Length: 180
Image (cartoon, rainbow, N blue to C red; front, side, top):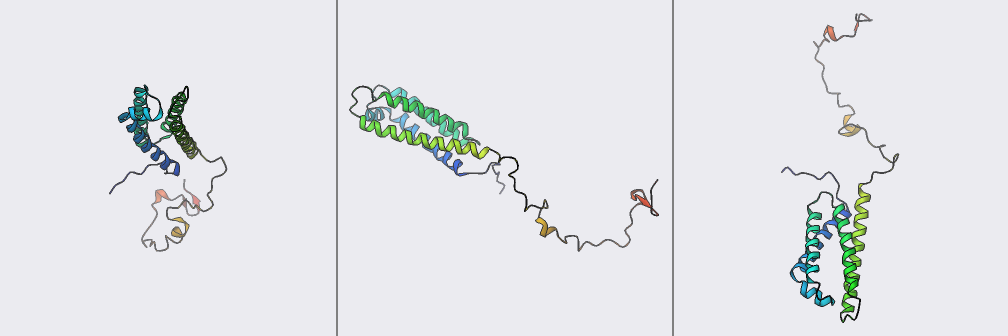
């Protein structure tokens, strides 16, 4: 079976990005399919179309995170989307909202996910940075495919044919003197 290996190693931040991608898709589908219930539960009636648009954004961002070889820019998109979501939720605290408690819980949840997005994007960015010059560690490398132990004595069993002669044209020295 021939499998293609991604040249970038998979880190914990990559796993977190994948989880955030799936979370985006799930949240986005809920916002697209049940905007009226979400708005009613948060006391944000009249903003159903806006919530559906946010849902489409979430699904698109989640799919992009899962399909991308580098999810970093898409996680930045999530951070920007979280800022917009928090601003929209903040408008629900204006006036007398009977669902202010539920709205506060939703705002705290979005703030928590925003924190996870920020940790993820910072980690992904740090994973791509090269170590500072002079910090490379090569003391245990030989440059030989099987290592120094495998190369040691590898030519011991090589038999040179007895009738082997170097062709005249390839001999740099003749009779102790350089070839003319």
